[in-house]
Image 1 (cartoon, rainbow, N blue to C red):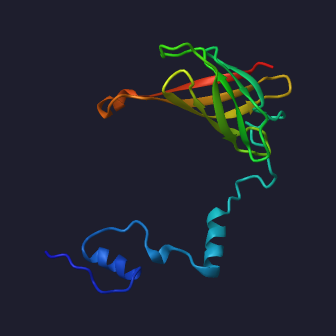
Image 2 (cartoon, rainbow, N blue to C red):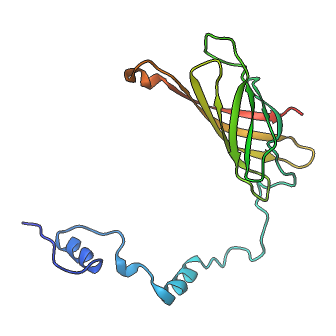
Image 3 (cartoon, one colour):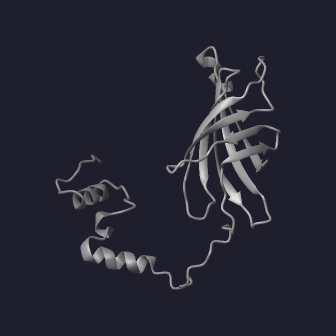
Length: 186
């Protein structure tokens, strides 16, 4: 059986053509709401009567806001200092790693990052460390969690470390990944 497309206008033509050649479409244009009809259909589709009318506080949000500024220590003994976060969420600082596979002596290395400024203070952030003692770069992403007033702030992070390799066949061993938990030192 030869397959040919029928000369109908899109998008109805595409649906008919696909049906003519035995293809099944998952979403057809006729199902896409348009105009005033769209607002009514979307309202009905998102009407969640089971959801409480009162705005409730999310269970992971707490009373204390988290601030990245200051000294932090992770579970491996590495330390970092984050300078003040500006009004755009940008920050810089210095990272003092306690672990390295480099042959050179460990030196403090600069970090540059950005955080999402949100109202509940449980911000997400990311920063890059340019290691001064090796040909490698690390990127960290994470979230700051602040507990109630008597609890400490915690940074939950994941990281990628890219080391320079001599040739493309060695690329497989150039990137490492891991996770660290930082707690406030000051």
